[in-house]
Length: 538
Image (cartoon, rainbow, N blue to C red; front, side, top):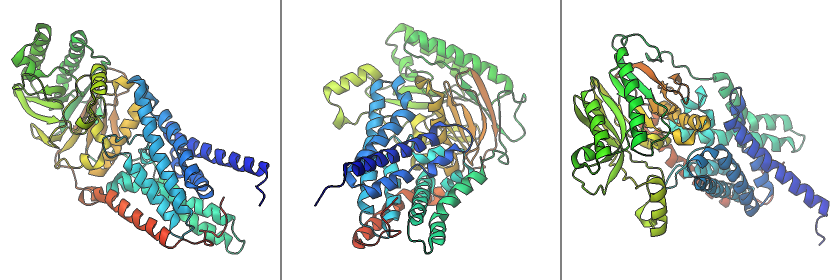
């Protein structure tokens, strides 16, 4: 039997490379091109790779997926290099693994030629995106649903089933359009009707997202401004979100300069009569209570003594980020990344971050090899200990949830706080020096607001300092990389329980179970002659 002509093999390789490049480009356009309708590229980004996986085996498809994963994570998350060059390689490795697994598995089910293969492929992709958000190396950045963070329709869908349901809709739309393209290459008889029927879901998703536009923050009784009235509107609770734009905190001199900015902005904010003032994550780095008691070195003690005196005498509650150590723990064997609430001259409440950033904040004991552990500690400092779980803080008449930074990446954990009046996310993304990174992080907070039906505020060092309405709409924001205060007037007791909180947060389990059923059906009803449109692909 003669091998195919060389020109045919070259044409096939060129076509495959074009499909991989197209999928990569569409994925990146959905995330990186601002404004307009470019986010709609999410509904086309998987289509070329479905064609590739249908025409090539699992090994080739896995290799192509690895290339796309490396490109997507490496480009969208290039800001990680500001933290450490190795961080980019970790993100790229995560992308390589999950994209390779996804497309190799998709190729395997498509090769069964079963009528259940394409639905199975949809669930496989969504399961792979879900996989990037669980475990020690969870890193959900650049997941396709977050490209639709300004879509009213996507946020409404998230209020029902969270990000997994949005992921399923995106993958389903891509599969629908791919099935329509395949039908166009089929027999003439019934071609138009078959194409229209198969592409209906994908076209409907694009149309709904395009028509629904951006969500509006009106109708929720909240306002956000840098220049509000001198006092809150009747019945409103006023929060002052402080953005000092400190950037660097590498020693006692930096700590003092940062505190000077924070205190100056907070003193000025008092003129607007806030009920609560909020500082960003690790706004004060040294553990306050521990240093007040043990006084290991005079410069740090004098600095912390001044900070503690200022916060204790401040006339309204102040919520701050602090590296916390228990005063009784002389050796500081356990330290937390914490949110401390100062009220009436004392610490009135504390929340310890649970979802810590891998490698820089936390390393599981089983991975703490001596040389790796020493290098990480020398580069990033001592590891923090995860907190016990979600808890609320009480500031005046308000019950507050204060998740910290990375924790707004996890929908199920975010929704586990017990019905707060509002959320305040304390974060510090100044190390990235990237507006792109701030937008990607903000996208996650928008989805968390929609999923929980709650007001979500963000206090950041350099941005994004933002007030988000319960539907995910931005009610007000400070420009990035400036000093300032954002004043938010909001109603208390207005939070509602969403369908996501009732049952939708288990959509991830449902997704995995249904996907497994489709995979089993694809294997059980494989066919050598049946292909979704009885042709050999695109």
